[in-house]
Each structure stands twice: as structure tokens, then as C-alpha cells.
Image 1 (cartoon, rainbow, N blue to C red):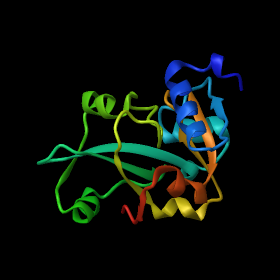
Image 2 (cartoon, one colour):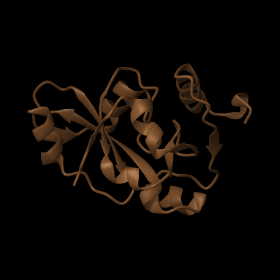
Image 3 (cartoon, one colour):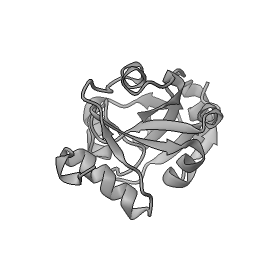
Length: 160
């Protein structure tokens, strides 16, 4: 796809992917992919193949935490807090945009404004092919589940 037709935030994601030496193709989703269900419907895949990028914040030190989870899973915040040794809370829209550079509904697993400690849901490994947001609610990219950890330098955990 011609990068010039992508929105600026999707172009930033494409640049980040390219800088990592990866050749992922961003796909526009005219119907929108704001939710995991919307994305799965538009792409014709299982909802579990959608990578939800959720931003949390440590309660005391206000450090951003990214949890990449399967589209069907809910994150047990206590599990993440135990891994960190500090309580986490769901980040609000302003904090999310401040640390990622993206609005909720289009947060990619890479290309953030700051380095964010990342946890990856082990359930994502059951699929060969995954789809992740690419900076907007109308852009996604396809990747192999085995590539997700290398791409994000995330820690694999059970999130539920």
C-alpha cells in the first residue's frame, strides 16, 4: 500500500515497523476496527486473533504499562500488578495519548512516544496469524504470533 494514502498516525506505525526491519503491510479497514469485534468482523477472522493493545498506569509511580491481549480476553489487573510489584490502574485517554501518541481504538503494539514495558497474553500464541491496530481505528496490520514478542520485546504471561 502506498504510504501516502495512510493517515499520519498509521504512517508513524509503518515507519516504526520498517525501522525494526519488518515488512508488515498496513491494511485500511473502512468499516472501522475500534473494537476487537469490529476488527474481527471486518477482517473475517476470529475475535481471539485480534491483538488488543491496552494501556495501564502504575498507581504510585505513574509508569505506563502495555498489555497485548487476545480480543476475547479480559486482563486480570492483579496478575499484572503481581509481576510488577506495584498496583496498576486503567489509563485514561489523555495519559494514553501522551505516552503512546495514539488515541484509544487505534493503539498499535509498537511506535509509541516513550518506551513502554509490555506484557503479551500467552493465549495469542495459539494462532499462527494475528491482527493488530496500526495507529487509527481504520488501520491494522497482520503478523505471525511468533513475531509479536520480537517486535515488542514484551514478556509472555497469562493475563487472566
